[in-house]
Image (tube, rainbow, N blue to C red; front, side):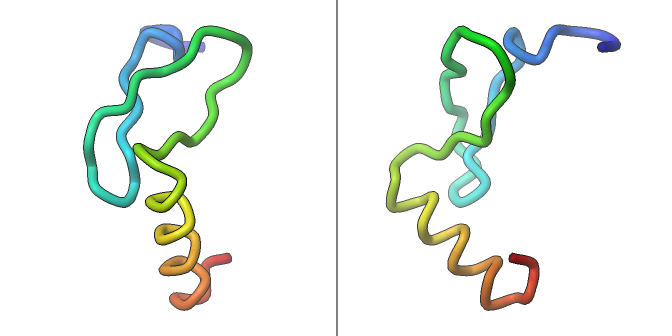
Amino acid sequence: MFGQPAKSTTVTCPHCKADVEQQPGAGRLRLYCTPEHGRAWRRRMRHAGWL
């Protein structure tokens, strides 16, 4: 809405903090480097009580 469009900014993997290339299209998804990083991040957040 304000500033740069969401698709033009880089996405950072929440697990390892590496930059992940954003795919063109509608919306902005939370992306991970690998599916394993997604599972590890969700597991860590679940054990911390966030999910």
